[in-house]
Image (cartoon, rainbow, N blue to C red; front, side):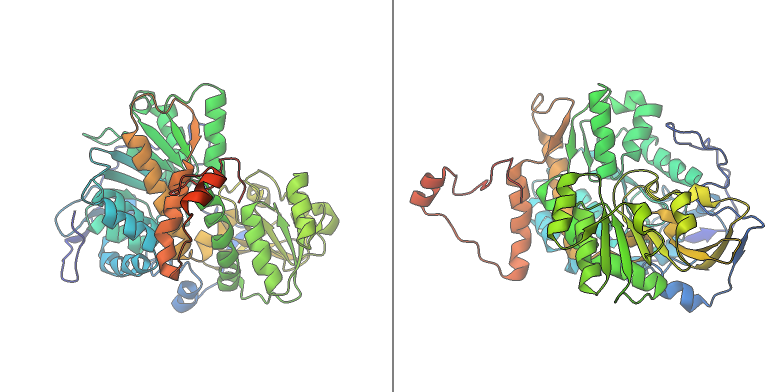
Length: 514
């Protein structure tokens, strides 16, 4: 498929709403008590919104031209077509496609690894006949991955894994190029599952691969379309949450297809989780709150790779950082890095910023928030929105005041207020953007995992969860070294023999911890 150029014209948007015939999709694993009010903030007598200038709203959004609400019409009620008449998509505003294309081009310049992979493999078409359902964050970096997969021969249908992280103009650019994209910023929970369903259940479409971030596409297909699930050749999953769900399925013997755990590959966990979060946590907090970091007391819940990256950045700007941990090894690492390891209850009254990065649920509860000081900032860096018990704040005694996009004041009866970011969802993708270079590493890893699973001979992979082969991790790293003009030292024959290594790698055993 060709990308739209500067002079491509759009057929535009028809104002007449279409009739939605699909039944609303709900999470098959849970019960939604109130689908109209879930996801987006419930409008009630205890909710009030401050008036804002358009520039204020835009300047604190996720670097996205379309993050502010252009209108109140749901994309599901619009009929939209791209410049060729293609209409198998649902985005906020297709007319933003040219602007979105510029963002994708900027991302391409900062993603040398995935672009190099595209160039090297484009003639071989290793994903020919692959039909991929993708459920990830939809931003400029993901768009580069999507278009790489298509260049390598795949057909795709794509939706978002988070209701706040979609860049609307990028989704429009992908739809404008003819890709079935179902995502917009600010979806309700019902919209979220509807979009995933539209990607999975389409006329003349049987997917054979899943690229997931959080496990929701895998979850819905397994529960609602088990016959389709059995036709899948492989699943690639890149988040802690999604990998955890895959291992649960495998343990329960419900995983009937092979899956690749990309999250725990070296080139994901040691780069995306650490370096990306180290840069984006500061960006997120600055854009949304203008907070001064010097001297602030911060508690970071979880000292995994995400937590380590966040702590490095916060400490570097002069914050006093506390850590909460359940794992004695991670806790000891935190102590050796110069942080105090505490229980949340011990310091919750004194801290200025609370950041969660555990992948768990109810890490910050209503009891904790009741004890927080006035003006405390609360946010989440984990994939799932379960870490902060936001539902416990939706009570008649508390008032929600919308300050700006993804920023809410929660006001207690005595006037105390805390600042909640992105309603407890992934703050760096909701309130800022990610550095494209480090996403290139993850994207290349995902692409190689899809190629490996799709082309693997029958029987190589059982119905289980696998790590990416070490050789592929090293290949992904090598794709990115030319950017830094880095020159690898080569082993001599004698050195290779002494170490028991192949001169071409892999250079470390699987048990090696980088």
